[in-house]
Amino acid sequence: MTGNITFTMIKPGAVTNEHIGDILKMISEAGFWIAAMKYTKLSQSQAAYFYNVHKDRPFFEGLVEFMTSGPIVVAILEKDNAVADYRRLIGNTDPAKAEPGTIRKLFAESVQRNAVHGSDSDSNARKEADFFFSKSERFDRQGNFLELVPATEVQ
Ligand code: IDP
Ligand code: MG
Image (cartoon, rainbow, N blue to C red; front, side):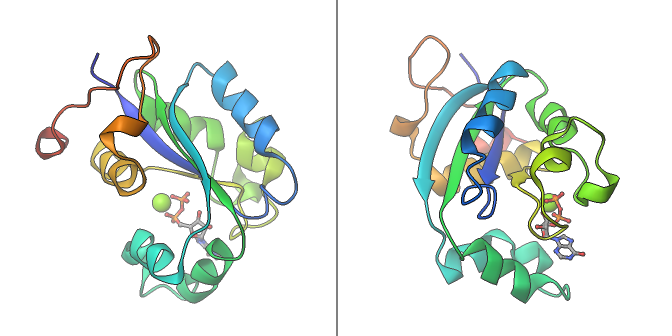
């Protein structure tokens, strides 16, 4: 089976406020299969690399500090139209602008401490998934290893 995937992190804040269970429940009920998952903590260099696209933004230093401040949950989510559907489920970056019922509206504390990450494109989803998980750590709904299209073919 070829996965249509996105990548998520439950960020520090949402983890220490004990929202892991609430957020995973919303993810499952929205039809996403949790293809891979782990509990980890980002190093300074991992956080800086992950958010490299934002390195010149005024919020970058604070973002790296926040993202390394405590444990996170990282996961690969599989579903048709995963990237767009997950962005809809999490809501706007700024919880004040997020739709009611979205994960960020419910659990974000601020624009920075906004509960979860969601990939913004298929190619970034693939890069982010490969950054955290090996081939033997991701599974499809039948319990087999999740086969993904070669990274070079992901737009
Ligand atoms: P996204 O997470 O909705 O894709 P991005 O613009 O990619 O939003 O920003 C990455 C992360 O950087 C956000 O999720 C948030 O934690 C943080 N961030 C974005 N904009 C701001 C800001 O204006 N102030 C503080 N933190 C911000
Ligand atoms: Mg983003």
